[in-house]
Image (cartoon, rainbow, N blue to C red; front, side):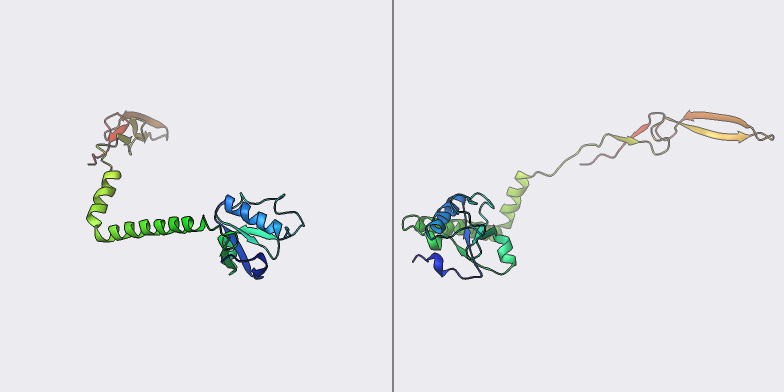
Length: 183
């Protein structure tokens, strides 16, 4: 049985699941001489494409927002289909919702009763990464410079006697060292 616009309570909002449903509801509001809070017509200033699937109309205040907002404020949320119910479309929509619920229940049941098959399927879709080697890293001793300064010696008068650079003994003058092989 279809509800009337006048039966909407002060703390009740009407939720539209799609832009098409919102357009039908806006037309119904317009035919009931309702308007937005600024006086604009619901038809001329349509909000039907906003908050796709989450649009709620606060009819008594002439406002709208996302369904989540009204849920957080503890409003009564009523599906628009209760006002615009069409005898031909309502059973089809209800049947589609029931089919979605049946599919969801079947998936959950399969997952609970056949964990090995689910794991095999998951592993086949997401194979484990097998890396043969990570090429190289900079030598921690010479930092990729390939050589190091041997030692500095000072003479008795305080001057530097030698600053010899030699090939790095860790990377053998390559500047990089191979990393471990991961399998």
